[in-house]
Image (cartoon, rainbow, N blue to C red; front, top):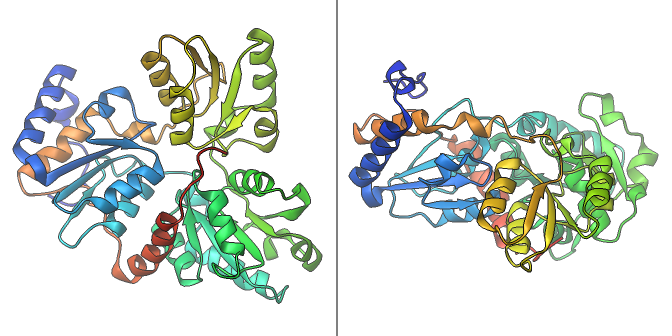
Amino acid sequence: MTPHERLPDRYGKMDSPELIQGIAARKRDLGSNLCILGHHYQRDEIIEHADFVGDSLKLSQTAARQRKAQYVVFCGVHFMAESAAILSSPGQTVILPNIRASCPMAAMARGTDIQAAIEEIAALTNEKVIPVTYVNSTATAKAVTGSLGGACCTSANARNVFRWALDPSGGGATKILMIPDEHLGRNTAIALGYGVDACALYDPALPGGGLQAKDIRRATFLLWKGHCYVHQQFTSEHVRAIRKQHGDITVMVHPECAREVVALADLTGSTEQIIRVVSAAEPGSCWAVGTESHLVNRLAKRYLDRFICCLSPGTPVCVQMQQIDLPHLLWALDSLVSDHPVNVVAVPENLASNAWLALRRMLDIIPENVF
């Protein structure tokens, strides 16, 4: 078997009970040699088989703690499995059940483009600029970030990573190049007390990012032109409409949402922060949540004593995350039992060492309780 084969036809012909029974059997066969990680945006039938469930930060931390499991099966998207591979112990194998589960935002920032951006910016200013790269990025982007003295961040700890980057005893920079989500960068800068004019948009498709020396001089935060398409589905009109429909509702959104949405919301937080706040809410309270709909629907089912709905009347779904399904999960586990792993995710050592530095800095910086 080759590492990245297509799903064999027989798995697509199996019904749900057969798939579920097969996955349970393979989990028993593999025992403590197996750890299944599931992201909150996964469908329910995948979450039910996960040993650990979390957002990017929590699962990165969990992956780093796995020392006994020979196999880590990551039910997420490719950059998450790469992070797990970078943080894994020698001899561990990281599997992504469907290798096509990718992240469009991660693809918006190539390592070579980040290196070129830093060089272009350096030619226009004598101030120190370091990259802060969202964990939703490729291993190559993380490696360049680590080699340049920067750090990764998550939506949970972005504020504190920004503080670290600008602290003389931390990153020692006077400017940050935030990659690749401009919205997380802008919302974080404003949450730290900076004005919108402290941000400048760097477009990697344009010469010099479309910036001039005067733009870089005035800006503390240079924001890579990138976004999460799921969180761009929420609009300020959605906030106004839900308030009109439910006068006493609390709106909480993810910081990947556009600035105008965050400005109208009552609270902003990462996936784990959203879960924590909504879980601690009073019975009878009303919540509109601006993030991926699988998570919102799961919260609504879990807390029937309060009203919880998705901020958008549509269905904001991470399509790439849904590439992980029961047939692919069973196939991945079968391949481990037969000792012929498929869809192995590995990162070359020359990239992994620098990427590890960026991830390690991220994991060492504690997130705040809520945005």
